[in-house]
Image 1: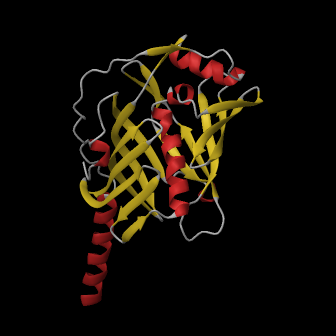
Image 2: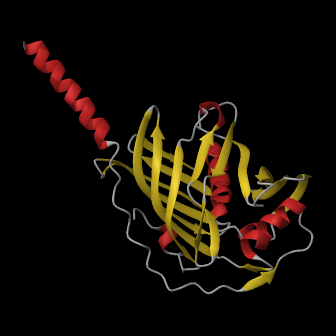
Image 3: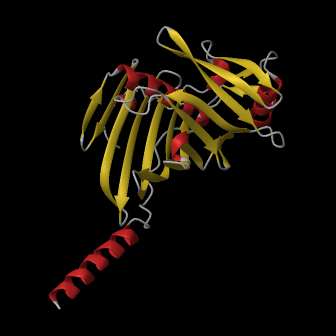
Length: 269
């Protein structure tokens, strides 16, 4: 009888834990910022055709200049085999720095907190199991994270003089971004029907202990508009060997062009 009760308790704990993984946390508070003001520049006339179609569908003839973005929302997180729900805030100084604050939750309450940043070319990740700081592989991965997440402030791909586009085919193009004294190249695929981008991919370090890079894939699963800027949401991140996303971000607010010079160097929410 004791073994029966023990087995029942284990089953109840497993079922209860699984139910806890299915409860969404409350959203983070909206980042308080004045309504953004945008300067604009003309849409460049030398873009590869699929790139021009995308930006014309997104902005029209005038491109808003975005200096910063604070992206807030909730997420599906997969840590190993376990699917969590969570919430996040990503803070970007466009094309320069970012800071991530992520909570994985159980029964809607924080179970694990992640602080990650890429400031002045140096990456740092703080996890419950330890800290990785200024590792060359992490710096490369963080820089690609900076540019990949710029899909939420997309005009940076036109207004930053260090960034350029090169043609590939009728529905794809290369996006070339800076990294230290070198460059990295994303392959970007566009939807032939809507003109919006379908996928960004690049070879990226997954872990500082890896000996080879892994293909990293970003894919919009929908589109929303904040302050007149169309951005992907939900949007997923996938390591190709996994075959399914480890992160799906559901964006609930984007604050553009706020002064984040202090906030991007803060800690936590």
